[in-house]
Image 1 (cartoon, one colour):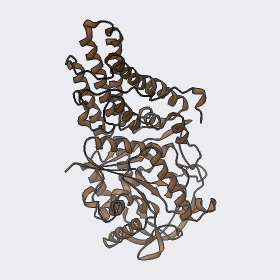
Image 2 (cartoon, rainbow, N blue to C red):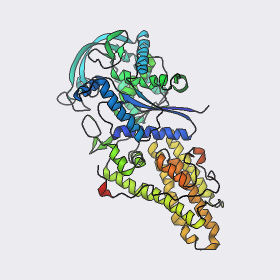
Image 3 (cartoon, rainbow, N blue to C red):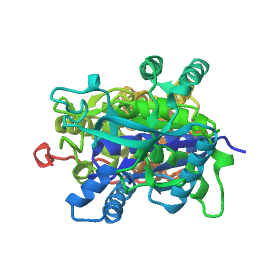
Image 4 (tube, rainbow, N blue to C red):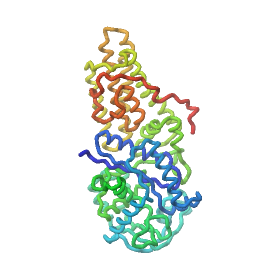
Amino acid sequence: MPDRFFITTPIYYVNADPHVGHAYTTIMADVIARHHRQRGEEVFFLTGTDEHGAKIARAAEEAGRTPAEHADHLSARFREMARVLGAGNDFFIRTTDEPHKAVVQALIVRMHDNGDIYKGAYGGWYCTACEAFYNEGDLAEAHTCPTHGREVEWIEEENWFFRLSAYRDRLLRHYDAMPAFVRPRSRMNEARRMVEDGLDDLSMSRAQVEWGVTVPWDPAHTVYVWVDALFNYYTALTYAQPGTDLVDRLWPPRLQLMAKDILRFHAVIWPALLMSADLALPEGLFVHGYILKGGERLSKTTGNIVDPFPYIARYGLDALRYYLCREIRFGEDGTFTDEGFHQRYTSELANDFGNLVSRTTKMIERYRGGAVPTDPGGDADLAAESVTTRDQVVRHFDHDDVTGALDAAWGWVRRLNRLVEEREPWALAKDDARAADLDQALFSLASGLRIAAILLWPVLPGSCAQVLVALGEPPDAVSLDRAAWDAGTPAARVTPPDPLFPRIDRAEVTP
């Protein structure tokens, strides 16, 4: 049986339309999922929407909708975003799905039976935008949320509590046993400090919020939206394929992606919930940074957003995927700019890659009637370089380093461009005595481009499929074992394509 690779994005909160920050996480998950499919692994890629809580109810009221109508409307927008981004997710979960709610209820009953849930009174400063309580010392000036800058409200109510404090030592032992549980390392250190500083029990129900999953033994309460949401990663497997329970095959997740603002929920609360429910913990969490605009993080709440759809309309989907993977080092904060986007598109996609494909296929068509020559066998060193590049890409993906993998693959593209200038096929074509040298140059360029297309396919799936077709290869021949020097189709015939990345005037592109 192939290795199994279960990967998740966080589920996105439906209080406003999606922005490029959501697109970023989805694209990164899709790139990683595609690479693991290239390895021949059985991949299950999960994304979806988080649809309960006070914030949704308020947003729905402001929009003149019922909470259910509001959730339906915005969930459809996020589903469409995944489709437009080319995400190959295997399931799209909604926390308003009845099977999800039923499994959440069963899990919290199990936690209750295990003695981890009790009733108590609570008072605290609550930010509706975060759906989270803050201690007095954590607030910003004028009793405002440190994340959103909005005024918090004091809430007192009798709720059901989860004994999070009881899991302090177990969490620390798990961190010790699994030092790569949270990546990058700085985020693991951050999670550890949260636990070492002491854990308060978690108010895991709400008496004043009707829009949520009902606590089965106390219908006057609904489950805290974060408890409801976190369990989606498990509940989805119970009904993603009707009539089939995927839990035994796929649980636990190999990799869960999220931004750093929800580190505490995923690195502290989530594993404690799983321990309480007697479920295995994820193998790894990868916490990426923020996309910045004007020096500030993107946020629907503050209105500082970047809409990804105009960029797709102007430059194409693959250009957006490439820019986000290349410009923003995965795991760190990065700035999104119109200028940077246009520069990457023009100098790298259009010049480095698109022009290389065009030159190579046109030279093979002109000098060899469109047939890729048989390998004369004179480029053993270059063939070895291709193997080294492929191995580098794989090693980077082994560490969830999407940017590093793309850097390595792009180094190979630039090596092929240097090869054109070194060999000068147009000069070789003028000398019949050097026909074998021309055959070698053209074969090496075609083979190298085929390998480049396979290595870049997770990031540029549409463009790389076009490159393979232009080289006379099947568009779906993207498995990693085909990224070998001699793995091309014998006597393949090229078809020079239309420009992969057409020139765009900078003046035309500001959304």
